[in-house]
Length: 481
View 1 (cartoon, one colour):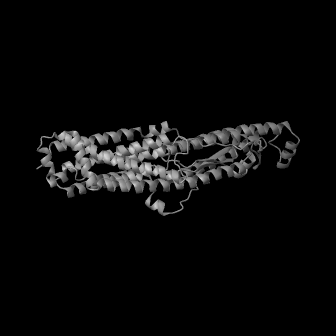
View 2 (cartoon, helix red, strand yellow):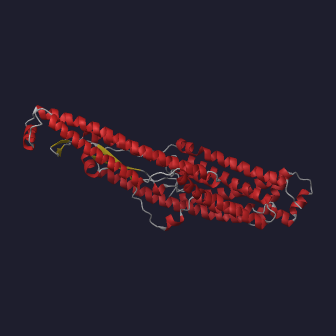
View 3 (cartoon, helix red, strand yellow):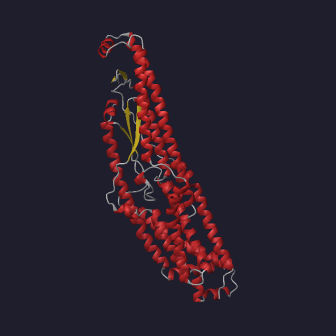
């Protein structure tokens, strides 16, 4: 009996041109999105490779680093076709400089949009295609799957043959899911073939097949979730018009209001200071530390035997003559400055750590609220799999910390700044011909990306089960007359 109903549903959707519509849309929109995204990636990858090569020539030694600073570059995401995510606001480099005994690092984002309309309307990536274009297509498939048959009076005829209701609703779910999956997978396969034929194969980079395959599987689950929602609404409606209006309202709430509203609610629940306020606080800490260093150095100079009574000219004459008193003073001052530098770095790191924790808590609150929508769950999954999400941002904050440690160790800590009567000199212990400190990019492991979104996978499955269970129970009580 299931086979008969399943075949009936397949033929009905094929004959009324819904499957043909879905197939045409998937064969056009998905390959177009893939090719545009991969062309953009190919251009940005070329820029990245050229920039890394030029930087290697520009910053070969510590002397080059002292003059021009240092950069650690982040490569563009190879799977941006899944989701552009937050890549536009992610840093494309970490910039470092050594100021006396302190290494300062900051994110640098010099990327610019070739076309401002890209930011205005968003990219045609798989996340947009599935959650917007195909979600609406699913509603077209499902809005009258039950109520439409009632209006055509075919549902009563089917049920007059003593067909079990669970068989009917299960066959409808299976048939609709089969056709949607066939159209979607045909579009994905065509997109892969098209990008390969154009010479912009998305899988030339190592480690891209697995996250892409998982992203496609998650998208299929999402389509089934929305089809289950469509069956539920259709089973609860008394007319096709009311079913379509209800489904459109659900889509607006799940795809538009809830994800965007989660950000506003998170800011109300967990307000934090802005980045500008944090930078101002760090500047104040630096100024206070510099003032304390100068006062401590003056006290040291006034208390050191053999130095405290020297004039500026006498001090430098003694320094050129290698006077032991000068060496003792220089060593004592270097130790003093190292202590202040360690305390300053600890204070700045504490400010950054507190701010990062607050930002993470606010983002976590927004994500938790947004997860009430399956649309948000899929976007989270595709964004992390693409390497354009919050796991990538967290990894680059760790990169910033590692780069700061390297610059502190190899450059800043060796800069022997010595001052006497407000006149400073130093830098003699630095090997200026040593290789400049470098930090190659390290990709975020797939396991770490999946760990960030495992709950989204679980929630998608739960939403699918809930919607189909609701449709199942509603259909058992549905008046087919």
